[in-house]
Image (cartoon, rainbow, N blue to C red):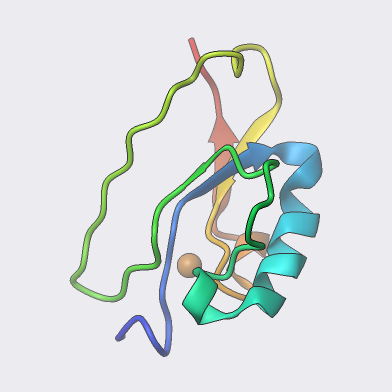
Length: 89
Ligand SMILES: [Cu+2]
């Protein structure tokens, strides 16, 4: 599906912040990649991509080791199932 009807992104946050970021992100709209702007609880994120598209991300993991981290998609509703535990070893 095109990004305008169903996009996906990859967002990293502490697990305790996931739900609030996702809820605020839904209100931020597609123009903001469904992410609350200027929210420093978002540790890393890609842009939204649609079917057949791809993206990459590079970020520092300094200071993240040992934290309870979850990656998720912030497209509205996806965060409930489209997520996983992120561990730095
Ligand atoms: Cu998604």
